[in-house]
Length: 101
Image (tube, rainbow, N blue to C red; front, side, top):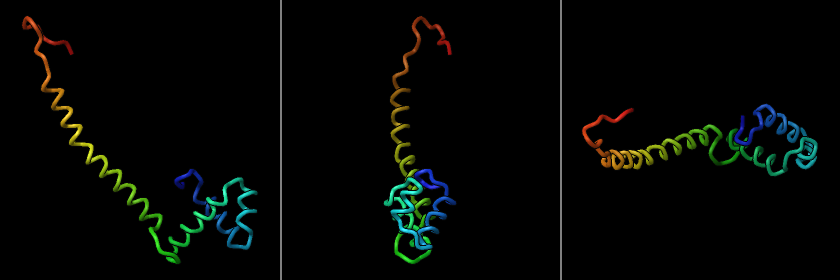
């Protein structure tokens, strides 16, 4: 599935209709999707087929996963720092009684 929720097969069929000669506006109106969406799909299809410069769909997916991993790794020290702060503030129970878990 694509990023916006349209199945890949649907995208392919839309692009096939446009490539067969149907106008983008007519296809968009008939299928109730925006013309901008079709133009974006067509632009990405041209990139994926090496007809235009840019990041392929696979490269975009890989880059998004890498960025997500980087964000998680950058957040990790803050999480550990906060845990250390919280553990440093542990108060021992009064009168020697044990804490219940």
